[in-house]
Every structure is written in structure tokens, then in C-alpha cells.
Image (cartoon, rainbow, N blue to C red; front, side, top):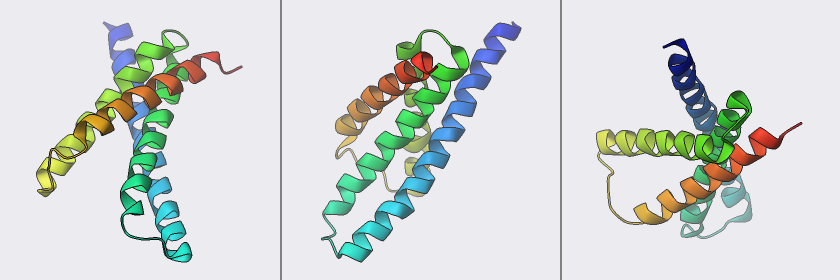
Length: 122
């Protein structure tokens, strides 16, 4: 039972790291958009990139802490982050089906890459 609980803690911690990474990336991208006076349409691309960075950080943390199974660990961490974002979006009333599949694919790819990088970090 303790090993399973430790595994859950790893994914919760990795999700927290992902939220922090995304929370730091979004204002930075907002500043870039503001300083370069880019069109508002670019904001969607930057938001997707920030979400990818968050999933990469979550996957990296999960892979680094588990030290094995980086691909699966990264995917699980990214899915937990997707679930968190989905619930937060639903609660705040901004839920729409637009771009959901693209965000899910981005999360899975970035999370798995982060997990593999986290396991292979020396």
C-alpha cells in the first residue's frame, strides 16, 4: 500500500509543478504579445504552448521522481493535468469542445516526452 500511495503523491506533485510551470509561462507569453503588439489570434497558440510546457514539466517531474517508466509516467501526469484543467474550465463556465482533441494530443505528447527526459536525466 505505501508504494501505491507514493505513486499517487508523485503524480499530485508533478501536477502541481505543471500548474506552476503553466502559471509562469502564461504571463510571460502575455507580456510578449503585449510588447510585440501581436494580434489576439496569436494568444490561442501561446496558450496551447503554455499548456504544452506545463505538461512537459509535469511529465518530467513524474519521470524524474519515479526513475522508471518515463513514457507512461509522463502520460499519466499529463492526463491528470488535463483532468484538472477540464474540471476548472467546467466550473468556471468556459467549457467548449473547440480544440479539445488538439489539446489532449499536445498534452499526451509533451507529457510523454517530459517523462522520458525525466527518466534519462543524469
